[in-house]
Length: 489
Image (cartoon, rainbow, N blue to C red; front, side, top):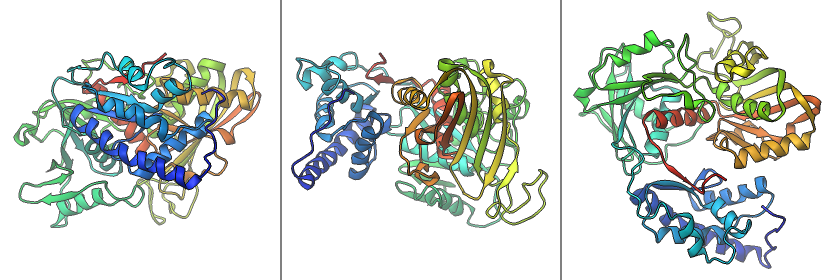
């Protein structure tokens, strides 16, 4: 944005109520575009679908923090209103960026909002091409922390049902007679991520639960190769294995023996020659013929995008990654036996020094950094949101402002903007990032630079942010492609 700042309103309350009315008026437009046209609206990468009035207003406010200028509902609503008048094909449209292009960057000079929007959407008007030829079925194998969050994301993105559909979850049969009710209850309520947004009902007769109209079969099985998914009306499915029990191609290939399964995604680092993919970085290595892919780890997903950006711009000679990680279900609530060193000690009561393979895993995704990074981890008594501290020796000197400005531009305007978010607040703490859809959030206030030595702090929701990265790989493996507006460049 340029230096123009929005003028201070004469009456803050009146201004608020006017903007509140516009935000409220945008909700049915956003909903209709999503349901009837499969058009998803965003403001600087933050979705407006199924958002409340205040959430929409906060998203507008977010732009001020990162662009150092106001973005008002007075500017975005006319863009949205014009979009609603057009017969659009499926797409992702960032109305925030369109508004900035029109009002601030002068791309709409001499044009009305209607003329500008029609010009920007010219190739989308009347388009009938769907993001995928026919909907793809998805099965979640395992229904723990990542499995349930993946279910939330898939259900939230079902819309008209012509992209991906969650058809089943596979679990071991529990001992409780009301096992199905308990599974649904864990999806309905979450101590970290809050209540499920919508309704869930249990149909014990059909052994399924129905979430926002999506009927999801609950299949009980003890091994991946023992299920005939076609008996449940499932075909050509992608299985997302959240268990972490099988991490090599041989073990995961058991899924492919099941009728109705075509591909498998592992939500953990893959072993052997399996492709480890970080969405936004090396997802171009995924080929149509690939049947098994690893989505790497949450920490690898968090550190690889900023490492790539920094290495491309400044060069990385060497570095150390220290992960301050929330405790996980693998640890004990109280002191008890554990096969790993230190992890047997009570997770809620201790900081636990342990190892991480994330630094080594970087080399699988970014070969140019192979052998340049070391890493370690500390598990801490918080249930979610972790931090990665990158202590780097750069190839050329810079300063704090230079590095921060570069990363701000990367987070806002580069192809990595879905992976890297940017925070410039001196008051944020870990709980502020619960629910972040980014792989990581760059904390500009914490950055330390001394010539070629730089220390970078990255927050990441190791549960939900990682699940969003898995979903991006899932979309690609399903062959789903949305047109994105405004176009890059």
